[in-house]
Length: 318
Image (cartoon, rainbow, N blue to C red):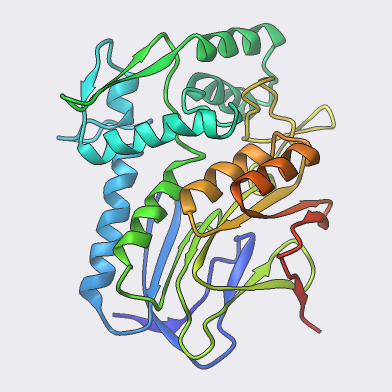
């Protein structure tokens, strides 16, 4: 097992800094369209391999773009005209995702798949979706629903919308990893920086979370999770207007309100969903959810913090 200092990809929005001579044993692999890094502070290859397998299993179940042999996944459901019997893990996850529609007052909707895919294809071709197309996709999403059968563990879609768990999948997987590491306090998981799960760091407890796009800024955190949505890595400029990969489920717009939003809470599913949902909200609405769901928030525009919760202490390297 390779032994090295805790680090994170240079493309990340923030970094895990090793400020004392404490080394981590690390498992690094590619899934969820990103590099995932799992670190523990004792030489336990079995633990790391099991954590990686758990992550890869959920990645395959949540995949909406690829058929996976011998697995009924999100792709299977999206491409079936009838309900599909699925693994209990996927069944429970989709029921949880469905509950977040109400929990976010509709700012998260797992049936946004067709609209999200249409925007992605359009922007990659340097084109903007017409208002008529956006309205049609929104109507399609709003007139569809997920159907669950608890006896057979089958999931279907009433209507023509499709499932997209991009704002949910990594956070939910990290929630399962949090349960997996219940008896191992010294660990961390970095799922491409947009979803991070932290245990305790030996000797210091806190991890230093460096904020990439705010000069010299960092946070000190432990036993929590971080969900971050940002436009830096996936920004399209057409006719001097910036477009992102994040779709507002009410208007269908992909014009971002902010550069990035960070949400901090012990529940990785919550922080993942909210960080994306907050990108479509005004600040007053964000503050309402912040209070209601007991989360900590940091919002940035033009590489400056425009709002943060009182509990979030931003520190600066000299």
